[in-house]
Image 1 (cartoon, one colour):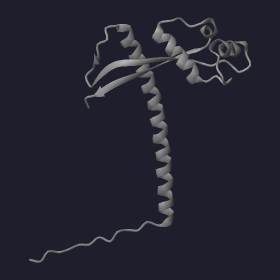
Image 2 (cartoon, helix red, strand yellow):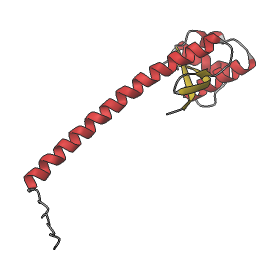
Image 3 (cartoon, helix red, strand yellow):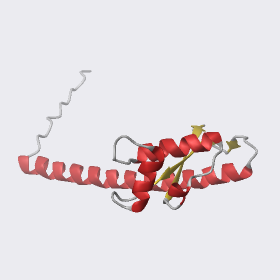
Image 4 (tube, helix red, strand yellow):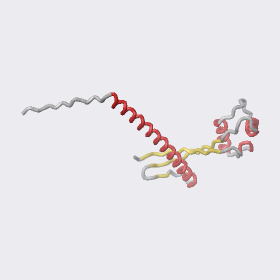
Length: 143
């Protein structure tokens, strides 16, 4: 008995179909990118909640869940620099003797970090600035 070979001829789509597919793919990609951004925002909020819970537990032990183990968080406080030309701005420049007159997040972050390490309180010129506390968590997934 002879084997029959059946060859299917590949259908070549029309340019219109290819153009439509391209639009669908781009729209889908945009939707997935938007979803990724939203999921990252939700994950950041959950990381902050977990970090706060870990810090308030105070025992230093990892948090072991069904699918993850979370280790010690890294907590960092940043200060929002005051507007240039304000008395608060001038007071910080004067107190810390910056050679440049541009005050940045990183400079304030370094000041706060140094004070934290030394266990010193914030000086008056920094006390009224808006504080932003960021926490990053290290987790290992079991899935």
